[in-house]
Image (cartoon, rainbow, N blue to C red; front, side, top):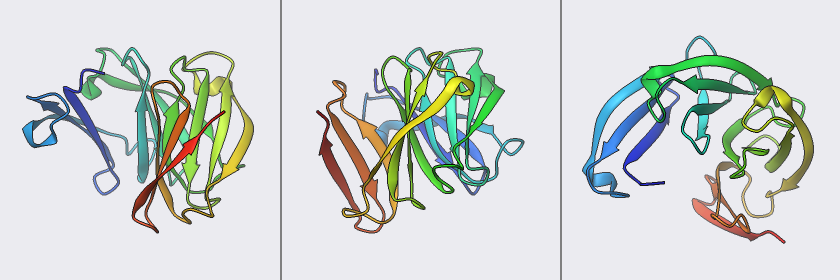
Length: 175
């Protein structure tokens, strides 16, 4: 929330890169801090999300068609990560590209470029992917056939989908 940390997922190095920003929200002020390799769980990571506290990290995995959950011993420090569990999304999406959570951690959203949709899951236990169950999906195919990213406004009433096919960001209003 402070804008002083940035995380980049790399599917060539199979890792999460952590940077510190000297000026909040200014990527030109970034300096590399550390990385965390996830090869043990996946070799094609595609999206990353964190719990509100920064003590949990979630990685959408294109190779395993799942979400991998990690606990961070030190909040927001990827070098302190340890694997906890994974949750398969293969029944809804065979090519997940990004992941997002509601503020409470009781909803998880996966966007993927196989189904060209957003898949919604409810978590019976907040921030615990092993408690996830599929709810519904929403097609974004008419706007982009290769969705690669997902984000929500703080209020949760706007959803943004980055699309590689149209090289754009599409905005949706949620009732």
